[in-house]
Length: 157
Image (cartoon, rainbow, N blue to C red; front, side, top):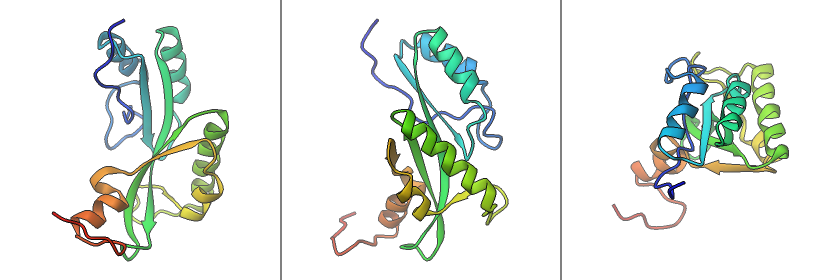
């Protein structure tokens, strides 16, 4: 197998109803065609496609990376909704993803009726085994940079 030039860590399947169209199995087939050894599935606020994704990935020799895209309320941006991507790096991380999505559904903390919200306190208590991605321009850090705010540091743009 050729060395990969890029591995998608943040793909959405048709289980992310507002921003994903492909079935998990089709995402895996595309990764095989592109000679990717791994692929990340991070549907929005859910793990519904994980079993199909995991089975297809294992069948095709692709390492499945399981994650979720969540929204949270930023205390640094006056409670503005920001994005965050959480990836499980092991079984403990996967169980923590289940915990976070379950807790969010139990609390039904919907602010805009489209995105399930997590509380940063929950994330702090369930951080073991998780890799946190910043959320890019929709994340807290990205939004702070766009607003040219800092935490006592100079941001040069």
